[in-house]
Length: 97
Image (cartoon, rainbow, N blue to C red; front, side, top):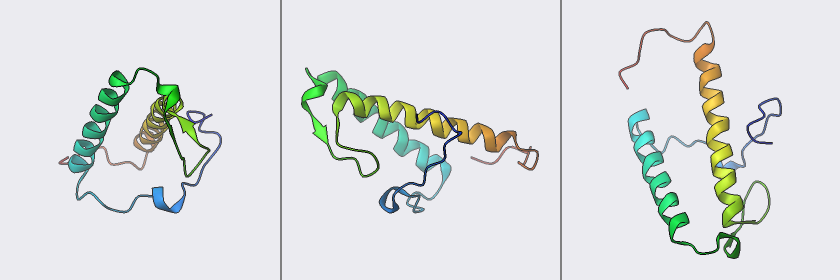
């Protein structure tokens, strides 16, 4: 469902970009730290199915479903980035980031 980009989604207001990070480098640093924390959490849990958390976009999901969702979500955004960069109007000169 998520990696299929033929269906567009509008993120709920609390999940929309807010300009929280000052640069792409800062954004990437936050992403990597969050990913590391998620991997450590998953390694330490004996039963991810026993842990639930609300999702503002879909439904309540257990830990296993959240890991699948996070992976698909990253895959979807990676496809979006590739689509933007493939556009003829995208600058060919590398940015300073």
